[in-house]
Image (cartoon, rainbow, N blue to C red; front, side, top):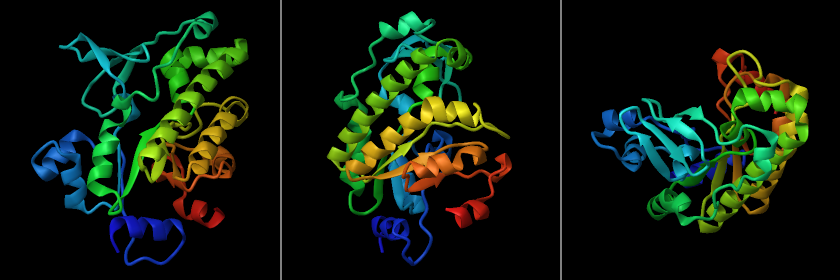
Length: 271
């Protein structure tokens, strides 16, 4: 079996020669330490990973450098971020402050070919040999990237319709990204939004179901309807919404972190 065959068999619940392996967002320092160069694909070959994936969705967008020394830049969403030592940059400032700002906002073009450059490289190298995926968001991260998490949470109470507008912006953008990636040959789409913290949800289960579950379901359904597998990444303790997330029709749930209170065996037995 090659990696592609091994992943397909595993996703179908079939016995395989050995358990397949994959990982998302491998830090560049790890890549260099293992391979001696900045080459993600060399790492995938060295570690014999069975699935490969594009990097953090934040890097799908062009950026304007605002302060090179501090690593501060503005991306196409209008969000100002700081690139530190981690793969994912930190939010410094957001383009939207009020509900009125949302109505005037236009999201980046999801079909800009810039978004798919690395996916094309992975497909050229691995299509049919490893499962090839694209890492995007679903409906939570972009709303707080655009508004700021604290403001977003306040708006859930004060301006709920505005929050739904933000969710729609995210959902429509990510569905378009997913459909295009799948049309290019992606075998799976990984949705990277985190709803859990270290010991509990970031929002209540009721808020998740009211504001975000419908959008998550729409993105998952679009991925599946387009003929690809849908992987859901969600860090933290998400026990209270496991039924909801699994019920969207996802094929894989990742990472199930024991340090955050997730019981891998219990989840496997339940689902």
